[in-house]
Length: 163
Image (cartoon, rainbow, N blue to C red; front, side, top):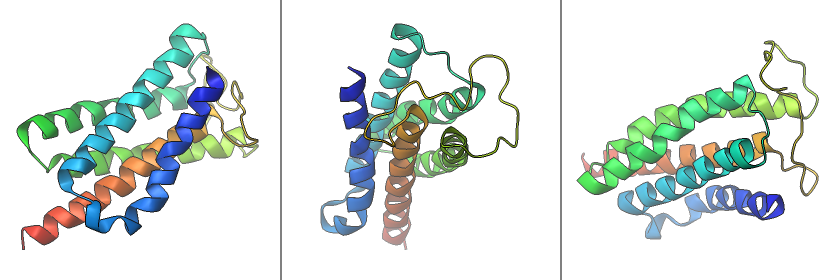
């Protein structure tokens, strides 16, 4: 199951790399749906790792969750209300999450901890290591990178349409 989740975690990275080339097929509505699907998948994945596999989330994992979990709710509300300003909120939250997940990935691969991680779980522990580079922090990094790029492109499309 962990291998399946690891493979699925590569999808946001692939989509993030393809997004700039899919401008003709890109819409604000589809961007909200993509953000909702990927953020909801990240919620399910993080809860699976902590509740089913009993991997203790570290402090940085909790901070990543704090920034990531609301994006699913904000995106769903934006979809229901057809409120594309949801991209602005998702852009802000995913930007903060990028800082946390980027730092967490740096620590996981041997970087120096600038901030002590606490007693809940080790920030440098590798509970998952697939394909030589996919860890739980890199999964979170891929999702937040996708949400950030997706929200940025949707925001740009939204602001250019209103001019």
